[in-house]
Amino acid sequence: MSFAIMAVTPENASLKLRGSVPVENVKISMIDENGMELNDTNGEIAFVFSAGTPESVSHTISMRYSANLPASTRCEISFELSDLVYDQNSRIKTSMELFSSDSKYVTVDDDATSLLVTFLKGISTDRELASITITATKGTSSMLPTGEYEGTLVIKYTSAS
Image (spheres, rainbow, N blue to C red):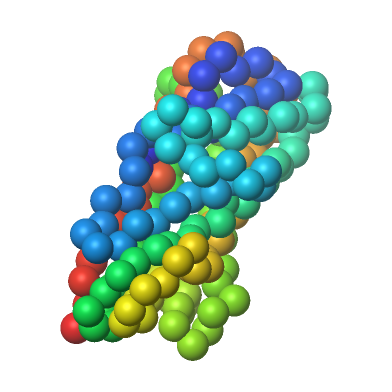
């Protein structure tokens, strides 16, 4: 899964989702703060900055899943987030935080870059998995060049034993 910032001005930037989370027998959905599912055709998040001042803007994406499994399944879902880069001299720093309120079936690792998940046997519909907060931080330079800033959010699903 990847994202890109398009048509950046010093005041705003948008995050575009490309791709999906392909997992056999489990559908993982990414939902924005307005309740919209993020996908290839509808996956943009805007980061709006005040002109001339450094600041951070955050957005939280909720992860939910649906499944129909013959047996409980354990997996690891890992995340890797890059900065948003226009060129060598122009970048927007990013960071992420993972959180899950389901401590019985979802564990966030110590460095907060992956989840250890137990998907339950049977039918699970639209069940809360975790949330990821992505923060974009505009540096001390008040002027960002207009253009396409690109970065990646890589999400890897690995079956666990």
